[in-house]
Every structure is written in C-alpha cells, then in structure tokens.
Figure 1 (cartoon, protein in one colour):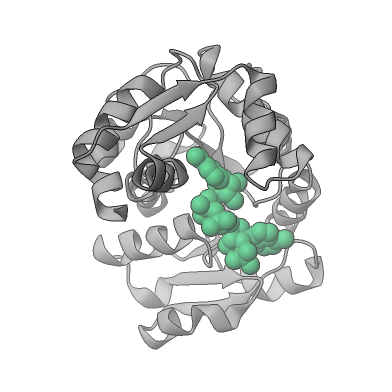
Figure 2: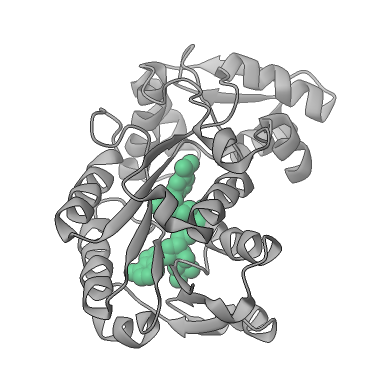
Length: 285
Ligand SMILES: NC(=O)c1ccc[n+]([C@@H]2O[C@H](COP(=O)([O-])OP(=O)(O)OC[C@H]3O[C@@H](n4cnc5c(N)ncnc54)[C@H](OP(=O)(O)O)[C@@H]3O)[C@@H](O)[C@H]2O)c1
C-alpha cells in the first residue's frame, strides 16, 4: 500500500500522517505533499516521502502521485476556488492509475443549505463520475474552530455569535485524522462509503459559554446576535465585509440545525470516544 496525501502541510493533513505512522504504516509508504514541500522537511527526516503538489499547477501532480495506490484529497482552503483544484486532483489521480480516493467533505454535502457545501457537493459528484473507487469523509465541525471564542472569553469574559440554540456535534481534528487513517489503512473495506463524521455529543453556544467558564475558571457570557448584528460586530472587530458575511452565514446555518446530530460514524471508525470540546479548549488555553 502507498498513500499520497494532498494537503499534508495543513493542520489536518499533518495529523493524518502522524496517525498513519502511529498505526503502523511504514513511513516509506506515505507520500506527504504540499504547495511548499520545504515545509515537509521534518517528515522527510522521519522517512516519509515528500513531494510538491499544487492543485493550481497541475504539472506538479504526475510525479507527486506516481506509483501511489490511494489518494487522500483534503479539501483545499478557499471556498469558491476549490472545485477546479479538486478536479485537477481527481484527473491526475485517474491519469496516475490511483485505485482509491478518500475525500474530506462537509456535513450532508449533497442535501444541505450549508453555505460552504456547494464545492463539496460538486466534488462528490466528480468522484462519482470518475469511476475511481472512493470514500467520502463528511467531517463535521472541528473543536478547534472555537479557538477565537476562547481568546475572546479570556480577554473579555464574553463572546458573540449568531447560532441561537443551534447544536454543534464537533470533534477534534485529531479524531477526524484518526478516522481518515483507519480508512486509508484498508480503503477497499470502505469503498463507496459516505461517512457523516461527528463528535459523540452536540452542544449549543450557551453551553459553550459554560464550558469556557469551566476551562478558564471565570464567568463567560454568550451574547446571541441577529445575523445583521453579527456581521456588524465582525466588521468592527476587523474582518472585511465578505468574510464577516460568510462567518455570520455559517452561524445562521448552525442556528437552523444544519450541522445535525451525532451519528456515531466517527466513533465506530476510530473505536474510541471523540474528544470533548472542553479538552481541546483546555489544551489550547
Ligand atoms: N470541518 C471543519 O470544521 C473545517 C474547518 C476549516 C476548514 N475545513 C476544511 O478542511 C480542510 C482541512 O482543514 P485544515 O484545518 O487542515 O486546513 P488548513 O490547515 O488550512 O490546510 C489546508 C491544506 O490545503 C492545502 N491547499 C490549499 N490550496 C491548495 C492547492 N492549490 N494545492 C494543494 N494544496 C492546497 C494547504 O496547503 P498550504 O499549507 O500550502 O496552504 C493545506 O495543506 C480545509 O482546507 C477546509 O477545506 C474544515
């Protein structure tokens, strides 16, 4: 088995490489790629093969993918720009004769109003049309997405948002990385599967305030805002209008229940409980 990872310079990709190595995949069977391969030097020193792969520069892909059996395509980081990048990866995988693609998608990507889902839905459709065996990992929210709320709570005793009583079945990046590593270790066993990966419990923003109070040892208040008020608050905090609107739309999605409820898929794959958000926030604090 050899597995090539696109996005290994990112937070999730690095953790997937760690999980693969910890679970016994020989370092020489892992190809970690990134837009800047120099950032993978520490992995190369541990025997992991490294290569430059920039999905905006498809000429970099044939050599990066050559000889691999499986591709982990970690969704790229700029919503709206992702589809041509993902298409380049799928086309290069087909040309390289890769037998299985594992893709990190978004919750219920095929049937959701989640504002960042269209790229993921279209990529899932690309995979279905490719004829290549594949597995879709629909990762729900990372616990780590709430790092800025931790800092706001620490500095001001409060954080704002627009998610109302909406629930977030989050897990840590490490949990999602572990699930990816399980699938990559035996991709044929997961061919055609679409996993809705969530944490074991879902929580609301008022409950997050209580968690932050416990983590920081000081009272933390959650101030719930309308979407318009949320955008204005984010702009006042320094975000540009477009980013503020996008962030506020995500909270509005959460308010509408778009992230869903715990599914058990993550725990079934990893064989262990997911990491509670309190633990992640305590580590970050
Ligand atoms: N589930 C969630 O809560 C959540 C939250 C945030 C993001 N996401 C999604 O999950 C992905 C992984 O999360 P993360 O935290 O690991 O994000 P991250 O740290 O931003 O990593 C993104 C990775 O994608 C790579 N990438 C971006 N554009 C590329 C291109 N044109 N060609 C090749 N590689 C490219 C980045 O390379 P560089 O290192 O060169 O930038 C990086 O390795 C994100 O990209 C995003 O799609 C999910």
